[in-house]
Length: 479
Image (cartoon, rainbow, N blue to C red):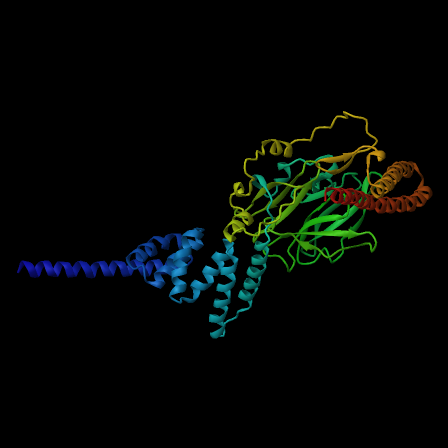
């Protein structure tokens, strides 16, 4: 009799436990369907531990981990779901691989998911786009640039301008309300001012989308606003312009059709011969990511650069990455995919550091006004060829071709200086003149400014030609 009672109690307990489990599963599934993944997750975790081979339980728990931001934790469970041929596991695992820079796997999984839903006559267009993005990102990852990111600062998206200080030679970047009178305080998008202080580049909203404009300084105000051509302002939004000291190389962010994230970074150059811009080129990783990459700035005087991204950041925050420039390091052919993935993200900047290299002095230099160099020797000029070679007189330049090119550079540089002085005089006359005189002076000033822009853009070309001539001779001598 006692045995019967005990047996009945065991059966009752098993039935009760099954009923409770069924209720918990039903409740968890309801929470799951409503998008309450955090609340549903503990039940699915328990079920997976009880039945590790159950593909559905693995899928549900993997999705909960994915939706709550635990991507690496979700990976094996979604892989188990794919192994059990659960359709939506393919989609979630593809997205997870994309977000964690496993682009080759993402591309393959999107392809499999497209095939599955295609058989059911479901719309595949969105996932074809995702597959194409994964393919672009995979190619970009293969050629990730081997830069050294030496510091990073997380800040508010509207506050990142305060995290660095450019040298005078690189121009300046200011909030719009520091440049334009009457601009609302909320409009803090960056305005680039060139080193001469006579030209600005900025973005402003037109018909609901951001476009890049430029203006020139006429006397004491900005004017002659021009919209940059469609080859630059393509796609929905274009913003965050920065121009190198050569006056022709423009970096900016765009959401055009080549983007792998939201905003991607691009570079173009102004062609003085055709008075137009060249086709923009997309920057590689790690400058670009699958997230928004807003701004890239170079300070050639400090040999440093910054780029801004919201990768792995909460809403409203960005990370400002500080990196070294001036030394081109090719991606090692033997580099493993995993090493490339870590450098492209980069979730930890220390993986980009060179061995036994200290960056404290460079980091300090990044956030201060650079010291003024003292003249220790008499110089007619300073022609820097590379880090180890510089000339200070024409007689020192050993190559006749380079000497002639640099002499032409010096002559043109003098013309630019004289033209700048003349412009200042003309602007002063304009300010003090009557209406008739101003109308005449206006055309003269605009012509002089156009001539100034042409000569200024030719200067870096001549200097580069002279530098290459010296290096060619040095290369021949070392053979």
